[in-house]
Length: 268
Image 1: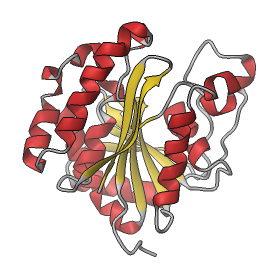
Image 2 (image 1 turned 180 degrees about the horizontal axis):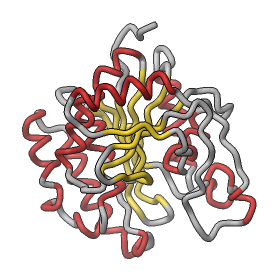
Image 3 (image 1 turned 90 degrees about the horizontal axis):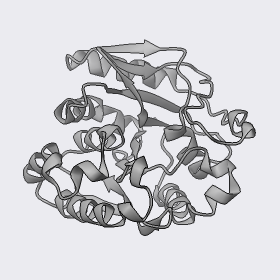
Image 4 (image 1 turned 90 degrees about the vertical axis):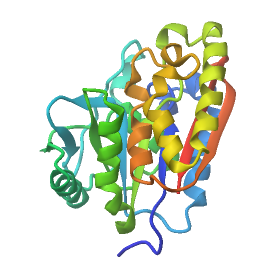
């Protein structure tokens, strides 16, 4: 069954590591968690599945598409307590939608490959644990392109846009500021500068918005905000899938982790 309207797309800041399972870290994520809960509450009807484009999965040569009906866990972090490597988020996969995503990518001339072994990384399972704590929403992921080409990711979003009419929610999961070397008071000013630029850019007319985002490295504090752009690239997929639609900010705080300005956005 299709949704009555196209599902929106999102770019979310997903927080740090397995934060929903770690009370001291979760206590620093209260504003982010509230925004994720509010996202779900804002939907007139639930999606049929969520397609997560995580900053924690990139592939060379072909876009990976998670196709397992029961994806395992992928503990792609380090330095956390032992029990954080035993947590489980047993959400079902969405193999039928994964197959459809694969077909759409191939039809658009974008190399893709189904991956039946890939598990949920924390860019997916951490925010989803806040959004769907019962792990009852089907989820599948696609990878980034390791070339880090912004326009290539816009094209991925364009190719996947038809899934929105089928009730698939496309969520780009990264962080609006991601430089682990300065996730402290040194990151306060650059995160503010980049966040301000991003907010102002996303409300431009579509053609101007796209051009400015593609040229993101010219933004204030761009390379201080994103020493590597893996956590920014999901925004290009979200934009490409809702290219001419309005954008609204759904999360914003100026003390993420104590010092950092961070935001999340809805497209459509």
